[in-house]
Length: 265
Image (cartoon, rainbow, N blue to C red; front, side, top):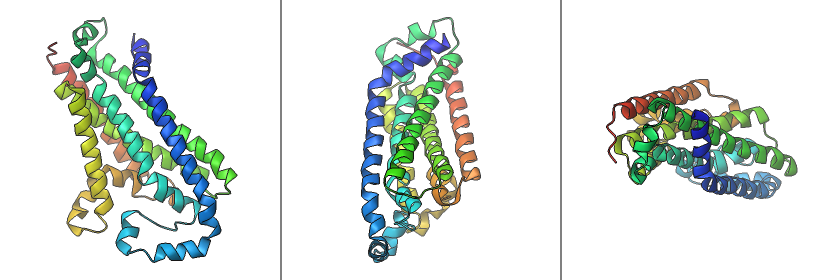
């Protein structure tokens, strides 16, 4: 029964998943196609970057931009990839049970000979698999493309950087599960979880510029995922541990909320 629900979750979202995969492949390919121009102009381009205001360089984490890790970190791993994976995770979380409530099929789903916890677990398993597959697609595309454009990148660090971005997608899927279980409304849940994700991203981006927001840095999921410069220095174990622990806590809370909720259709 759980396996059936797992595949049903996949079927319900397959069109959007293909679209998101296409977005990631397209954006990654475009950025990789630009890199030879950046690397060939090396010192000239770096001088151009150095002329940027410090505020801009801090906001976009433009560290050693003409190198492979610096280029990927700035163009993909500091914004595009994590935000896409957050969007996918939030969509899965927000629609997990709220979609059933809005359609009026929740009573039928929860009357099946399977517990609510197992229903939620099957949907969470689908979420985890989808996000890691999208992360793998991105990694594979960069792995192949980096060879074609002569980009020097530590493939192990690249894998860990991709995993960190995948984990932040999972974290905000947990936020989506919480709001979905609380409200029973897909649109509200997706909007709330996406808004929280964007808000944390804004705080992460401007924290180097505004001292008043520095107190949020230790509890910001974006800092946990991206603050360790994984593409340069390898896995940030404390950051990934926080993301994984936070995801587990959010998932467990959504179990509790759903099991105590009185579903009315």
